[in-house]
Image (cartoon, rainbow, N blue to C red):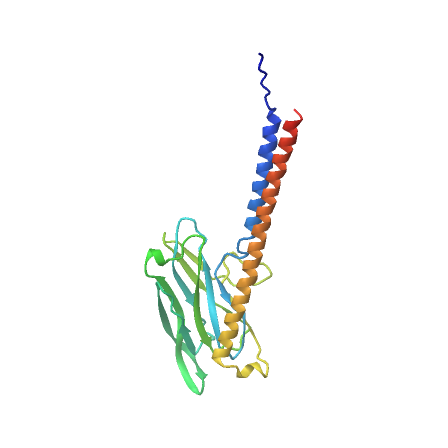
Length: 250
């Protein structure tokens, strides 16, 4: 009996490899798009009302693969200071505030204020509590009254466990975003109804706005991620079917 061995042409293997490559590329591209649009320190909400109070949340992503974020320092304005600053505690982190004497006193609720909080610093109490690679943490404060200004920049320093310090301090002057933008809060003039809003009402609105932003961003990321996986699987299946048909005709 003669046994004939049929060798598959190398083209089949190339076809399969090409299909797998296309599938992988599709998944990588779309999953990259599903990542955060701006992986830098941001403040939410991004807009608030002049003269009111607002709960501000700073979102800090860890952009390093081999280091964790151990400290966040946020500078508060001294030219347009806040008469009231309160900090929300975070388990596993200590918080400290720095108070500076004002060059020009301000008046709040009929009282003259000569010094104000100029910096808030959060520090992880242990390496386990630090922000790990590919994770983020949120740090919240409540401030007010908000000044009659167009924008407030919160220049921030992010310290990593390897000693690196990323300075998020650049102010945007044109349409192009700087490489290390400072978190910015846009202030709008109050309407007749909004002017009398209490601190609690404003804070609740800010938290609700932040939740909506998170939901929209997470939904987009999930949708793009699923699309990438579907595209990758479809490409792989197409390659396997083509290989099977080619083998059947050999």
